[in-house]
Length: 256
Image 1: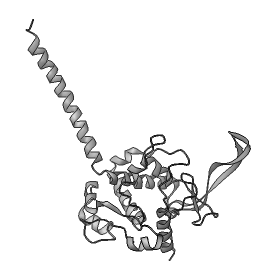
Image 2 (image 1 turned 90 degrees about the vertical axis):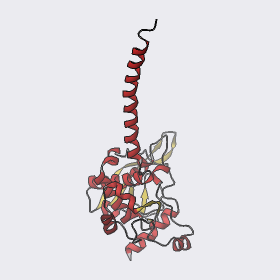
Image 3 (image 1 turned 135 degrees about the horizontal axis):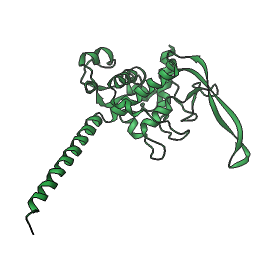
Image 4 (image 1 turned 135 degrees about the vertical axis):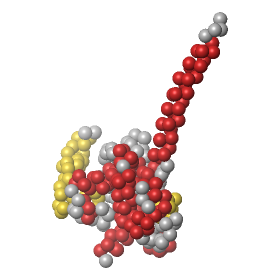
């Protein structure tokens, strides 16, 4: 029952636009090397289907596309498919979208390109935002869900990864507003671990990085292939330029 309630609250929070806010604290840098780590991407896919696919779909991604991550169809079918039996199907949400719309007024947003859509030129990439957002939750009894988020203050979405991270509180101090000394503001001073999670802080950060890497990959699965092809084309043009330069010099050497 508790997991069902958490799932429903998650959907409600996301319908309310948990990913829509680009304000809040400065974004941390997502470790880009994760995009070249197949084990990290595979773990991110596992986290996605276990914690995100309960309410969210990835309507533009097919399960069998995860073969590009080094997984066999049998591994995909046995470990990552909960809402369908066909490995060629798209990643449908486990919850019936019609029921979600009936309960909440709108279906939860699709996450296929969520990492690409949250980029902010002034603050960082969409991956930077998601990496920061998923690591900025803290317990807040004043909120309906019991959670708040530094990257998205007053977020409606609860902390779906709390079992992994544990429960953290946030310490704030009241200070004078630097722009208006007569006004007081609350300044974040750090987190306080209230209850332990199943992962250490370093392990949790690593798990979030894996999840964000998968979300980034899902938005453009051919990105790594396109990058490798671009490097090969540039190398070819470089070699071709050397040959063309020497051929040109040989052709014109006797012309006076």
